[in-house]
Length: 84
View: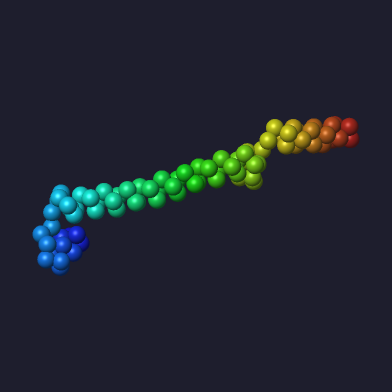
């Protein structure tokens, strides 16, 4: 509707194809939207991968951290067993 109104205001007949057809305007707008969404998704994927690689708080614990926690738990259990 917007395209047809713009063409009518210029005194031109709106065309679907042709030199300045609606299809080309629609494809251009669609590509711009797709490009924006694709770049946003790509940014999220790269940022997430980087944060997981760097060991952010949102990522899972590394093996070393898990081993340290297990050692602390074992020490507490040994201390509790020795106290009995």
